[in-house]
Image (tube, rainbow, N blue to C red; front, side, top):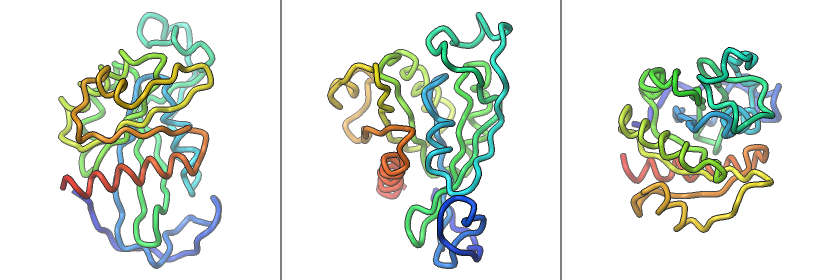
Length: 204
């Protein structure tokens, strides 16, 4: 359910100027950002957040080998162990509070608590590892009843698939939106989040 909270007072602008909500904001919406290990959740929240994002990251060590899926993302040196948090004022009247979930299987039990009060979930997908995304979607549907949008994060070396191919591979129904974004591009991420808000409004 979309939740309305009292608005703060402040000024609009770039990160660092936007510690408080603009006085025009009348609705604050909690959004979950989910995805497999190393899919770009922390990057996306960092790209769009107008406040300095809160991150709970730890350095990946050899102790993670055999527990976390580190082989598929050898360039990744840190991992989220609790959540990422950021905020974006999507329109003059709507602000989104973004909660990024840990991607590792051993932290999936945290999802139910993080999902409480959320309006919907943005599911980041890496087309190089579609099987991992299938597991994520299964967990999301098992642990929550949130509407969601699938966002394909475009990695430079990732294969390109048509949306219908992604829909079939992930066994998505026709009503689930699929969008393409680049987690490093603020505008692309904002468009994906806007698509999620529209979808959540239609299904609530």
